[in-house]
Length: 508
Ligand code: BG6
Image (tube, rainbow, N blue to C red; front, side):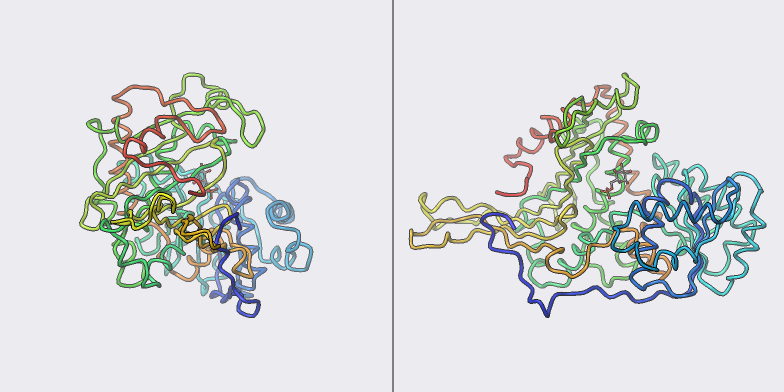
């Protein structure tokens, strides 16, 4: 809790909430790219955690698939070390880790050749009665070849599902092509496009907050909301992914997917139910309502940036072009945007978006600032009434804060103080916040596509992003420099300050 807060929302010991793990149906999951970074860092640890929580049934089998032959023991040793690295020790010292490893096997198959596919088909045929899930944790250029072979070797039948992850294209044409290729083998209702931001607890809580409380929805519109800010700040640089990132940049890597999905959840109309089609229809309408940014207005509404050498968390770090060893690169590692949602609910309410690498701290949040009170009854001694602000914090310290004006306690007259009503999820719940992949993987097995992106959403997002990229290349200006460890280029501050507003840090 921070100084001056009204207090964490207190939940009595007996009433502290626990999460419940309801076992999913028997399944067999193939992870293509099983020796790669995503599988090692995210997928296998997430599956282990779900097993630890009791959510995997006895009949749950996982096949790792990659090109190189590897004895099963060697694969298990790799998975064991990945889990030891990424899961806290309290979960890995008991018998659960061996129980999980016993579910695993390995098959070598060549995504672009025919080697190994009959072996894979034979191995999977033993589980024909189970739900089959294929997770493509591979480079995106392999999505097409793998899908095609899954079809050819009889592995796309029944209600088998395929999971793919961004980048889904690099512009609208390539996204359409990829979706068509996948769509030839798997019908849309069996394609699960992951945006791992949708699996984050607080993101789902945004839906609970909006649609399970009568308090907010009547105020959730231009009459009562002044503006919305969405920040996804990272302190890391491009790490090992320089080659991918330099082709992509922050707009494609983060805005096209994660930030636009967050914007959709804030801005969408209440869906008629939580069913996938209902939620996705509403998100699609938001994407289609975004006012176009192109060469006529990009200079005013967007700020691309690129980090120079500086210090993050007290450690000196090189600039982007040194990190990727391409001094000429004009790829943006930061972007700030002022976005308008052109519909009845949101006209006149700007959505300010910003994301970047090597910023001062890792911090992602959605901040909804309500309008000023129409008339103040307080005098100058009481202090100014600041605008009510709802902060939905994605990471770290997931939680929700509602910043309100209260009277400073004590007999010293009426003095106003801006203070948060603070609910930290870690304090309120008896469980650690699960990783997004845990929830999403179980949803695929359950056949629940609500938190996945439909084809038309992905394509609509690209349709909005592409003109911004085109405008930038026409403007032919390098991205604005910023010092690593700062909050981005000063032009991003100017973007919002021109409107008489400031980027919200955690506090008044
Ligand atoms: C990925 C991006 O989708 O999301 C990365 O490709 C980024 O560049 C990452 O670092 C951020 O995810 P998270 O969950 O750490 O906020």
